Image (cartoon, rainbow, N blue to C red; front, side, top):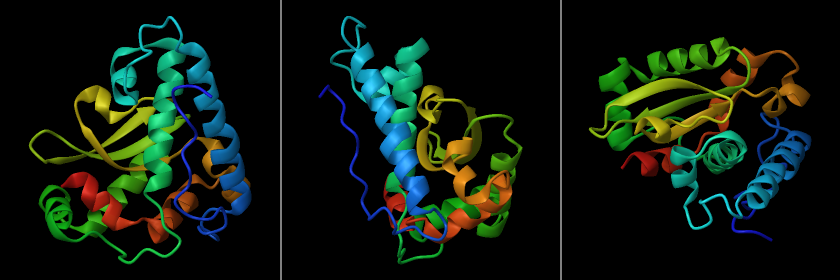
Length: 194
């Protein structure tokens, strides 16, 4: 046990099927994320970040500490945004208005988001974030980077590391990205925006 612990999933491992299989959840959450947590805990002593929050570590560290902290933060936001039975198929309220304002329509936003995810070279993440004024932006972040490092508030992310989709989709990253919309919990994303 260290300072950080592996997050509990807010759903059963098979709840996101067929979009994300139980097997992928087992490897992605149970192996990859668990390794990042264990690695960060091992790196923390004498790092100067023993009492820092995860976001502080991501914004101020580098090297192995940053890589593991960033992956923990990214994955916690990623896994918490899904539901096997989302109550809404698209955003509502202030977030819906902001998407239309900043992208023209929800469909235009989805198209741009998927394109950015599909065209990110190598491993990383595509993010929807809000700036300090509430304006929405889509960014591509490589490896363990997170929008908080740019002063943005992360709202929604799709993981485009191969371990997130290869068991279910092989090399078909665009198919994986298109399927994820069916399991987004828009109430969670909306709360992150408010």
